[in-house]
Image (cartoon, rainbow, N blue to C red; front, side):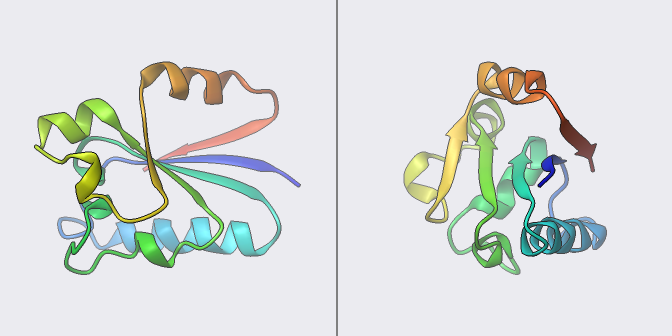
Length: 107
């Protein structure tokens, strides 16, 4: 099993390739890999409850983290998030990046 750390910085409404990246996360998880999706910058909009076209709730088994700074900058609070999305900070992300044998993709 390989561990993947996928970073999404774009809003799915501004770039159609974002949904393809979500598909990658889902497919990697389906193949038995450990997958964490980190939403940063405008990517955090997809974690908002009721987001039009949001596919984050469909990522069963994928650990989804939303950057606390990006959320604050966009006025999104914990209660606004899709269930199972966890808020994390830069220290958490550094710890994830420092783990051995993690494959990281930024989108």
